[in-house]
Image (tube, rainbow, N blue to C red; front, side):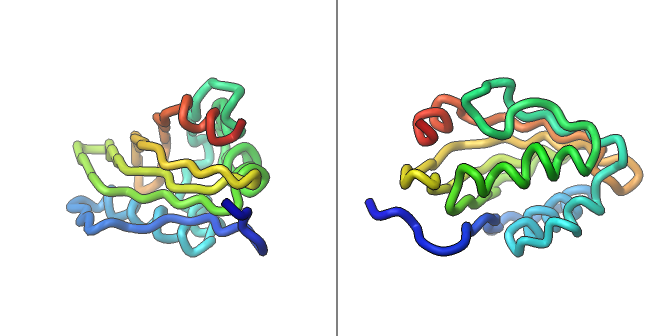
Amino acid sequence: MPSQKGPARIGSRMADASPQTENSRLIASLYDAFGRGDIPFVLDQFAPDIEWIETESPDVPTHGTSRTPQEVLDNVFMKLPESFGSFEVQPDRWIESADDVVVTGRIVARTTGGHDLNAPFAHVFTVLDGKVARNDLFNDTALWASALA
């Protein structure tokens, strides 16, 4: 397959999901903003002491835990274009309970090396006082590692 030319396309696509709670609508707005490339909006919705937990696998470029919005920017959002020419988060299911919002879906991406990634995810958000206080991300790291190899 030919590699993608031009600037990286990093974003998300909302499925026909219909979040029912204020917290879920906040999370939906983050996916929408991420899809538009409006990272400043996304970061503004984070608590100053956010806990953003990615995989511990060193085979995934966004591994580790970030504890501030700036760390999420540096360790996650800025690392994606280094490895991916395109990257879409496609949420399709919302599970809502009090302060917690679980979103499942797929990551559909193409690496800068021309490999495709189509992998399931689950993102477990906690919203406190209208800000994202925690996001625990679950990905199929074997599929990520294979696409990035």
